[in-house]
Image (cartoon, rainbow, N blue to C red; front, side, top):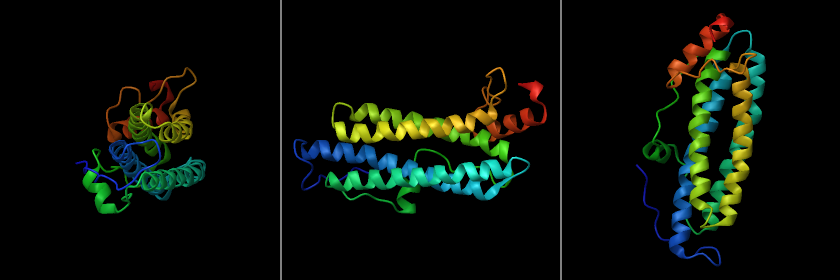
Length: 194
C-alpha cells in the first residue's frame, strides 16, 4: 500500500509542488526498497555458512555500506523536495509490495541464489523509477541512475558466483527466493547439472 504524499508547502525552484510530491512519492518507494535491501544484506552477512563463507561475508559489507549511503541520499532528496522522508520499519512493512526475505541460516551459494532474486526486483524497480523521473526532474533522475550503476555492479558480483564457465546461471529457471536458493545449492554440489 503506497501512501499518498501530502502536498508540500514548497519544493525546489522550477518544479511545481505537485511534481515535487510525485517525485517524493517515487523516491519514498525507493527509500523503502533500499532500506529493506540493506537489512537483507546484513541478514545474509550474519547467516551465511559453508566453504564460501568468508568470501561472501566480506563481499556483502561494502554493499551494505553503499546501499545505506543511497538511502541517505534519497531521504535527503525527498526532504529537499519539501516532503518528510519516512524511514520507520512500520512504514516500510506497510508500504512494501514484496515479501520478506525468506532464507535463514544457509550456505553461501544458497543465499546468493536468493539474493539474485532480490537484486532483480530492486534493479528492475529502480530502473522504472529512473524512467518515471527522467522528464520530471533531472537531479532525481541522475541520482537514481547513479545508484543503478552500483546496484547492477553488486548484482553482477552475486551472479558471478552462480554462473558456470559457459555463462549459464544456475538460477536461470528458478522462480522466487526459495527455488533460486535450492537451484544454486544443487548446482554447487553438481556443477554439471547447470
